[in-house]
Length: 479
Ligand SMILES: [Zn+2]
Image (cartoon, rainbow, N blue to C red; front, top):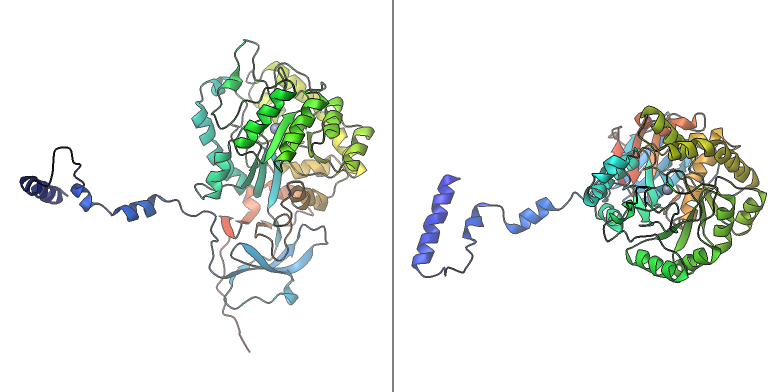
């Protein structure tokens, strides 16, 4: 090193003597001892986290297959994927394994599509803590989306719709392979009326909603023109969905889950502006009136839906509106409060406790009526990566079977997100987003929430998580 340095200095002195170096010129010759620029760029480029992990075809053999279509499970199935796409799937006897394939023996496991969570908040730090929020720079809050995204993916969730608070840059970062995470659709902001669920103006008169980076536009608006402007700003910031609050909520300081928020005209303005750019709206809607207003105005999904009634359910069926129940969210609020006395404001704990029974009854009503249910959890309110606990709750609190809970978390969720042409089921030509779970979730749905049992998680042909090793087989070809 030091001799290199001496050589460099001698070279520099010689060059100066020859008049090659004017005082104002920058001498780059000292960089010659380092790797060249192209090498440095290659080193600093991220590992392409989204590129397929394996060369050639990959075969998963022997598992019980739940393909997500609603068809009966197939035992001893084989699925072949190559690159990012599924090449063949079916009974083992019907699907030959190519001789060049990387083979995973998966007897005793269940193979199913990667799960889709239609309501997360990846930038939200788990453990609602106002004091911590006050001490968190917005840039740091955004960086927390990185481990949160990784935890979500390792929980078997290969696609999410982020329901607000996460900028489009997090989605783009995952797409570029900067860090691991699920595929994302983002709502970026959440729209709320003054004093509504998304208004963070605290009783002390400090507005905690003004600490957002510029790529998360401020969402507190009143009136049609303000709504129009805000939706356009949010779409400009890269939103795939527009999220608005049509009722009060649990964690907001100044409202009730039983109140309606925004007028039908205001919500319809958001729907119009979103549609004009090929996008749709999702509504945080807990109160009965808020749910009905949102449906009337043309939103695509009701989030939480705590106070449904027969009339609301009927219009959901008629207008093809989905329910994203997030049963786990109020339970997580109560569990957090019980584990940390004094952490949450009393209003939040009381509201969470108050809504739980009505929430579950409302969900039951929707399921019995045949409303389309797409899985969602509100993680950020609860711990990231624990998303699959929602499936167990769906089964316990309604007539849903484990198979129906899986469909809600795969095919139906993909339909709501308009991703069903490439995701949600294990069919030839679709993206290889899949899970191998040890055991049978049709017998015990809760195993999906047990990370120790997730043996393999594949997103677009890339291993997102792998606890089993591929076998090298000597194939008997042409014998
Ligand atoms: Zn939410």
